Length: 136
Image 1 (cartoon, helix red, strand yellow):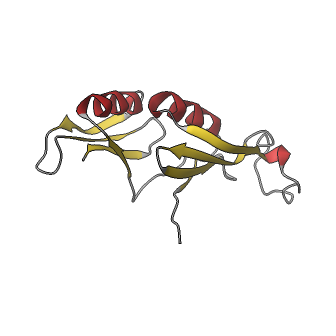
Image 2 (cartoon, rainbow, N blue to C red; image 1 turned 60 degrees about the vertical axis):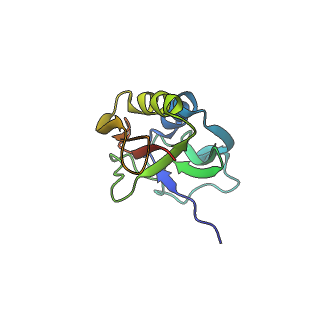
């Protein structure tokens, strides 16, 4: 059994992929656009102008897979009720990753020492995705 997060960016998936590649070195292992699908979507299944949007992509972040898509909505995405936890090897990597992910976003808890980690912080990135950056 496996469990993998699947995030829908509602028209901003290409931007999100590029951001995560730059910020934390995400590797794209698969990407398919709506107009590349072997079968066309049913009429009305995607908004007008979504033909070249991302139907599905697999991202590799360290040892984890993250699935992403533009989905079938152009409404503002809502990433509530969960947070992605990014474990890094040391405080320098925590600071670099945290600052990169926070660009255009919002710091929820600045990086600092806690009783469970020598370096931990929380943020919401520019897309509204919650992140915890932690050194074990």
